[in-house]
Amino acid sequence: MVDDTWSSALHRLWQAASRAEEVSALADDVYAPLLATPGVHLVVGTRWEDPQILRYMRALRAGSDSPVITATARSVPEAAVREPGDEPVVTRIPVAGLDDAGWPEAELLRRTPGATFVVCTFRLDHRGWASLGVGVDASADVAAVEGRLAQAVDVIVACHTGIIQRGREARRGADDALLAEASLQMDSSLDVEETLRRVARIAVPAVAEGALVHLLRSEGPEFVAATHVSVQHRRALEEIGRENPWLAALLARRGEDEDTVFLSGPELDGSPFADTAEATEATEATEGDGDGARPGAAGGDRHSTVISVSTLRARDRVVGSITFVYQRPEARLPDKAFLRSLATRAALSIDNALLYELRRHAVLSLQEHLLPSQLPVTDQWDLSASYEVGDPMLDVGGDFYDAVPRPDGSIALLIGDVCGRGAEAAALTGLARHTLRTLLEQGTDPGTALSRLNRALRQERASRFLTAVVATLAPRADGTALLTTCSAGHPSPLVLRSDGTVSEVLTGGLLLGVLDDVSYESHEEHIGPGDTVVLFTDGLTESREAGGAFFESILPVRLAALRDFDAAHIAESLTQQAKAYRASGQDDIALLVARWTGVPPGADLLPHPLQLVRTAR
Image (cartoon, rainbow, N blue to C red):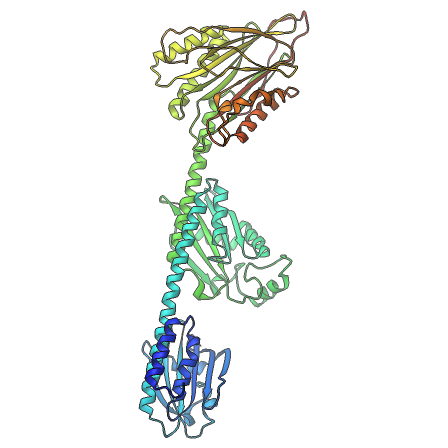
């Protein structure tokens, strides 16, 4: 290699620079050719952080195969005057005139008396600068040496610039991938707290060592989630997020400021993130037990703590904030543009979850008002109901049910299903339930009640049809009850006998709201003590498994297995079984269950005093 001409060496240097991942990898390709230059007896390079912090020094002497490398981080205040501007500067200095206070290379250069130090200082990036110099004797062509130094520095600077650019491109690609993954993860949940927890988890450790997420409430920031690469520090972050007044004041001051802010050093004084000797010792002392640990570096990482706060804004309103905690070199801190993009995506996901939550509460509240809040009960019957919303988009469903005490001491059970979902279906649901309830309370028989509801729907020019079934349970002196059932296109009720047999009530009749002047026939049968009548909507029977079978095919068997349970257990069990059974189908499920307990023979059959029990909805 020492016999190569400088042009060949420079060509190899450019080739090495195109492949290098670190500038230090060019050392052999730079030092050896320079040392082969006539009159050069020493090559020495330095790397500085800020104007005066010497990071390392590397020297190679003629006749030696092993460089002298000094790794350090010491301050050399007098070296600040050597800091170059934007352009490289080549200087000739007699070695005898070098001051050790500003020239750490002097000690190595003095080993050759009468030498001259030819040095090129240059800036690599905004964080620091570097120098590359040679010690030459009187035989050297100093002008040629200066030219070679300048050419070598050009390659080094170009290599460093290329490494930074490739790093930025790689980081940009990683950031884009992270943002895409973050969007997928955050958008996959419509639960507010789960979305907030995902925001925190996605960012650690890819973006920062720790993260805290707050939701903005009317009374101020509310802590929701925190995470950290260290389990011990995660607990500390959770406590800080909930109770720390410094952080609460910071978030309150931030208000609606959209720009991400970074805080470090003196800006963190008085905060739980302040870098103090005591805090560092406490962190190391508590590593592993978690008590009193500061949420800073895990393990032996000594990088100063930096935090950033980003406002989460979506649709022109602030929904919260995300605070990142960093324990990493400055070069690995994310830029504000990336944090703004992440905050925007997080804010939209959180806002969507918040809007979904508001809609869910509104829909469920409306659904509750369309169903009875209480069911009547006496010692003659055991009543219960169950309702399961099947639509993940949470449109108001059209299923309804009710139980109505009648003047003759009987009770009327009704259940129905309006075609479709949404506001129009909800309006018809309310009309149908309240119309039937009013008629049945007045003693109207089931067939007439359905006919009058059909007439009302036709007069209102309802654009949707509905199905319904009405069943009355009338006590008899022998302890049984007369079950009278009338259906308008609705699934037939089932009767679970006390011996475990299950039978279907024979019903028939046209859908409601289709034709004018429709009459409905009733079917009668007797039920005994311990028998149970089950009314339901088609969401129960049409729950379909992956193989295509409907829950209807196994419903009798599942119902028979519940013969020894009360009405509440039967209603809830059948609902959950159908929900677990279905792989497809998202219809609502409504059930109304009445278990006849019977009356003693000869007992008074006048209306019994009624109590009200809250129904499941």
